[in-house]
Image 1 (cartoon, rainbow, N blue to C red):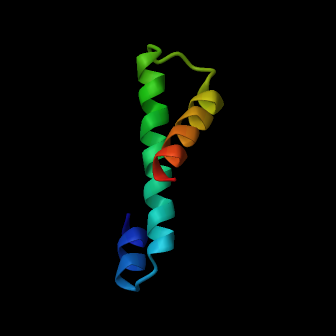
Image 2: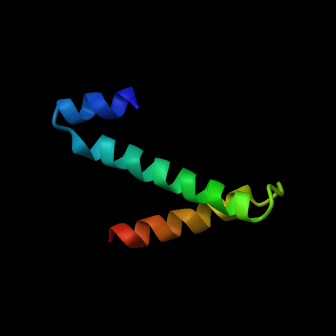
Amino acid sequence: MAKSVLTRKNGNNRNASQYDESREIEKLAYQYFVERGYQNGNDQEDWYRAESIVKSRRS
């Protein structure tokens, strides 16, 4: 989080935006994991699904 704050102060919103996007993907992928009852083995599927959704929201 410190990197995000520093890049915003320096006016480089691209790095901060990428960080924010990754955090959003991470949270959504974790939500899928929780909804599945904490069953392991689908982490990549969860990540790609979340990534697709987050990127479609931002376009």
